[in-house]
Image 1 (cartoon, helix red, strand yellow):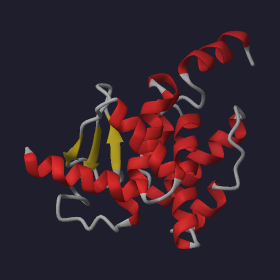
Image 2 (cartoon, one colour):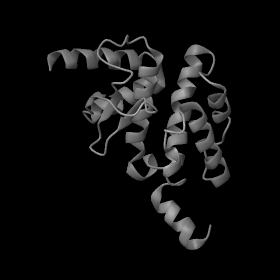
Image 3 (tube, helix red, strand yellow):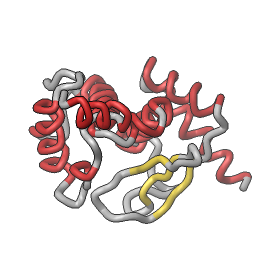
Image 4 (cartoon, helix red, strand yellow):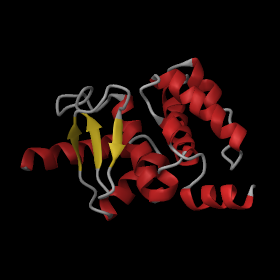
Amino acid sequence: MMEHAVWLEKLYHAVAGLGKEGRAAVDFLRSRRTKVGFKKVRPHVGAFWTVFGNIRLNSYYYNYQTPLDDLRIKTLIIHEARHLQQGLFTALSVYGELDAWQLEFGVYHRVRGNYPHPAIARLMTLPLRFDRGVLRQAVKLMQEYAGKGYRVDLLPLYPLGREIRYWVAGR
């Protein structure tokens, strides 16, 4: 337990070192006493949040020995913190994913000076708005980067309440 607490403090320090987005994520996670741990899941997922407000890093890729200068582990924490900030219905939508991906890879680009894949560069040009065409394009680009096993295509395009209103009202 103590070793985990020491590791988490070091992880939070590393994430906060990424600038204002990292500091905001860490402040939010600390204020909520978010539990961060590891769980092995399918390889198309780097990390995920839980309905209990926790974050799990995929132990397929990450563990306590992962160097904390690894940019991906730090940007994934920022990404998952954004989902927890969004709330359940936004986080479980393509709109919420686009928001979190753009935050994550905006930080990644600022630090590295490039994107890890051409699909991410294209994703970053998409406007974050409630536009079904834009959100369908986001799904294609996310799966181009993460693989078809990344099942963002199963999520509603809009947060659930807005999605229901769209289908009921026809717009």
